[in-house]
Image 1 (cartoon, one colour):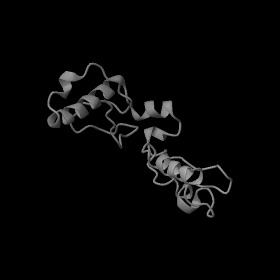
Image 2 (image 1 turned 60 degrees about the vertical axis):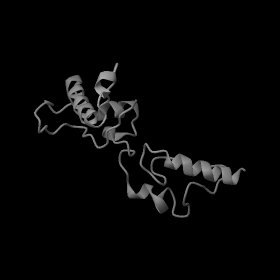
Image 3 (image 1 turned 180 degrees about the vertical axis):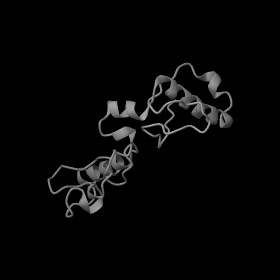
Length: 134
């Protein structure tokens, strides 16, 4: 099972429960944060904690180390500049996923519907390719 928590800060600014200490994602901080998330889930899925055999916790900086596009762990492609969306991606003449070059398509976190880690962009470009090459 994979649990994905969105909008986790790259730098820890504080903890109202005073359980996560420091400002960096040490192993202790990752463990305390993951335990808090699992405790919240346990309320809605009783018995979950008893079934966990092992876990891997990745901080925002761990995610960035694995993929430089995830700036500070931002799974929405890091910096989402307006110039990379809609009519600005990469030229005003090109919309959607097709390009003027036959067989070349755009598919990335900044193409519709965006969102970095969601599969929407891949689904839309696949539909266009199947339309063009039935």
